[in-house]
Length: 123
Image (cartoon, rainbow, N blue to C red; front, side, top):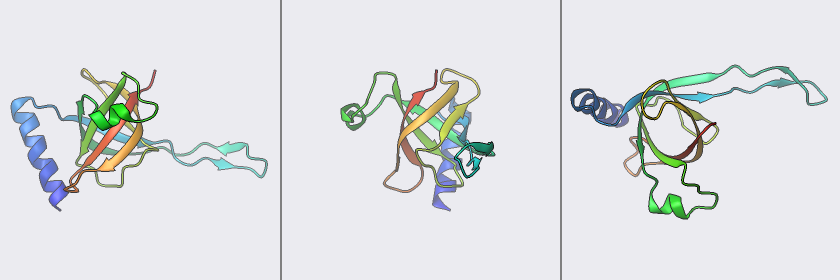
């Protein structure tokens, strides 16, 4: 309940002042069905949830993490009704950060109102 209230407040600020939260989708490819030999019989059904995302410079801790590149971004995700994990992508339809962002790390913020992610844009 607190998470949704905070996301609503953040969204209101974004709408009113042009603040950094944009409409986005958290997207998973779904689980494919495989035959006994491991070949894919039916591709997974994608799953997606609407959310709000804010793009920011990576934190010092993110920069110190193994595998970090200068193309990585910090994404704060709010207004999300499921559990976000590193199997997801954040998809943004338009704007400066439009595209598909593969999540490399996902942590819950200390207040439990959203997620802090390190992500890399797909080519």
